[in-house]
Length: 274
Image (cartoon, rainbow, N blue to C red):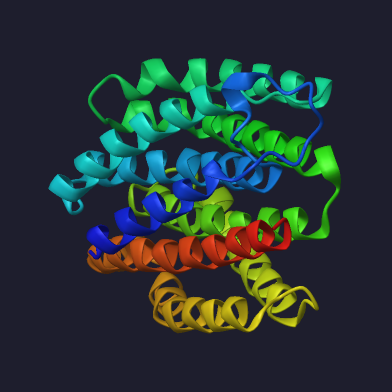
C-alpha cells in the first residue's frame, strides 16, 4: 500500500492549520492559528479515522495484511486523539463546544474495546458504538461549517466525507468477510457507494471548484474505479475473503486521493483569505 504517499498528504493537510483565523476575536490564543476551513478539514478527518480504525481492527482480527493493519490501527488511534486535542483548543461557538463533548463521550466508549487484542467479540461490541462515533464526528464537522457558513467550508466538509466513505465501505466489507451483520453491512456498502458517487459528481460540477480541484476529482475517479469493482465483485463471504487484501490496498489508495482533493480545497480557501 502506498502508505508513504498517504502520510505525506496527511502532513500537507495539517500544514494548512497554520493559516490565520477567520473567526471573531473571542477565539482563545491557543487556537488563534486554526482557521474554520482547517477545523472543518480536521473534524472531517475524525469522521474518516472513526471508520479507518475499525477497518484496521477487523483486518487485524482476521489476519488480513496483519502487519499493515496493526500499524494503521495504532497510528489512526494516535492521530484521532491528537486531532481531538487540537479541536478542543478551538471552540468558537456553543454548538462546537457541545458537539465536541459528544464526540469525546463517544470516543471514550470505543477506546476500551480498541485497547484489547482484535477479536470477533470486540468487532460485535464496536459495531454500534463506532456508528455513534462517526455520527458525532459528523456533527462536529457541521458545527464548524456553521461558524461562518462559507460555501467553501461546506465544500471542504462534503469532500472530507468522501474520505470517510472510502474507509466505511472497507469497514463493512470486512464485517461481511467475518460473517457479522451480513445484511446490514451489505446495505451500508451499497448506500455508501451511491453517496460517494453522487457527491463526487457534485464536487466536480461545483462552481467553486478550481481547475486544481477538478484535477484532484479526476484522480479520485481513477482510484475509485478499481476499488468499486473489487468491493462489489462478489457477495459470498468466502470469495470476498479472497479479495480482502486487494480491498485493503485499494481503500488506502482512494483515501490518499481524497486527502489530496480536500487539501486542494483547503488551499483554495486559504488563498481566498489573502
